[in-house]
Length: 149
Image (cartoon, rainbow, N blue to C red; front, side, top):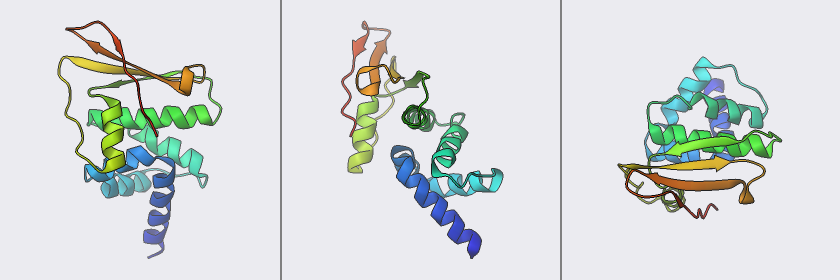
């Protein structure tokens, strides 16, 4: 019972810190399994900021491209807010703005866009900390305006 309560409390903390990643995992039906597996296999920090970065880092090699991209995005944002001077690049196989909107509204996730990718940069020195460019084999690079909440 104590383990179950501890797991619930840690999952609750991750939901508060990793809003989009946890929503995505829930939408895909793998949140509970990934959380349980993470805590079974990793010693964790009592500090939610360190716990969040460690959990997100554990998803960087996940088999699902969307989970990888989202966890890398949230990792970058949290790291920069914590003072990191590093810049991060995240490749998406679909429009990230539409992914965020779907997760905010509990809508349907957009499908992969074949023949293009979205290159997102997250860095302290960028306007609003984020830029995103759509790259296509058929078109020139196009800047994408993101409406992140």
